[in-house]
Image (cartoon, rainbow, N blue to C red):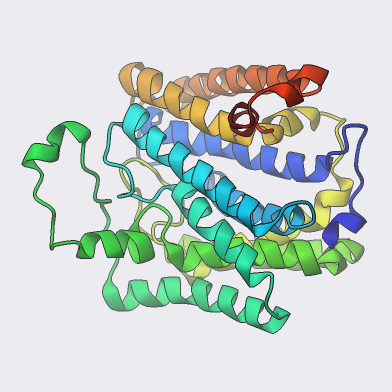
Length: 350
C-alpha cells in the first residue's frame, strides 16, 4: 500500500494527499470561474492550467477507495457513493436548476466509479489494469466512431412540462458513456487507476525522481499534441482541454497524476503549502460553495470580463474559499467535531 511510503502528521492525516487535492481545487476555481467571468477566447495557457483539476479529483477518488478499504467494508463504500450521488442531484436541482441525472458532472462519475473500483480491488492486478486501460481507450475510440456533441443535454426544472426528449433516451446513454460532462469512458478508467496506484504504486514514490521525469515527459507530450490538434474550443464557456477527452489529453492527464503521486512524500504543510492543504481537506464543501458563488454571484454580476478584471474576481473567489477552508480545517480538530452527524462531517470533509 502506497500509504506506507507517505508521512503523516499530528492529525494522523496525509498532508501530501490533501495538498495534491488542494492544488487541483485551486486550479478548479480558476477554470470554473473563467467559464462565466473571463471573456472568450481563453488563452491556451489558461486552458492548460484549468484542465487538470478534473483528472486529479477523479484519480484521488479511486485512490481513497483503496485506502479506505483498510478501514471500511464494501457496504460503507456503497453508502458513501449514495451520499455523493444525492449531493450531486441536490446541486443540480437547487444550484443549477436542471433535471438531475442528465449531464453527469464529476460527482455522478465519482459516485458510479467508487463502488466499481472497490469491487475490482477483489480481483487480480492484471484484471484491474486491463479494465482501467480498456475504459480509458474506449473513450476516444467511441468519440471517433459515434461522434461527440458539443452541447450537453440540459433540461431546466421549469421546462419539464414543455421539454421534448431528443431521440428517445439515446441522448441519456450518450451522456453517460460518451459525451456528458464526465462520461464513464474514459473517466472511470482514471478513477480505477487511482485505486490501483494506491494499492500497488509504492514504487512510484520510492523512485520519485525517475517518475517525475516520466510524468513531465508524458504531460508535455500531451500538451504539445493538444496545441497542434486542439479539441472543441469551448463548451458552454468552459475551455478545459477535455472536450472531448481524447488520446492526447489522456496522455497529459496521466503525466500530471504521475508527477503528483511521485511528489506526495515531498508535500508537507509548510512553506506556503498550508493553503492548499486547507482546500484539500474539505474539498466537497469547497465544490458546493464555489458552485453557489458562481451561480448566484458571478453568473449574475461578473460575466465576460477582460483579463485584468477577471484576475481580481478569481483572486477574491479564491480568498473567500480559502478562508472557509481554514475555518473548517480548524473546527475539524475540535473534540466535539466527531460528535456531529455523519452527514455534516461528510459534506465538510469529515
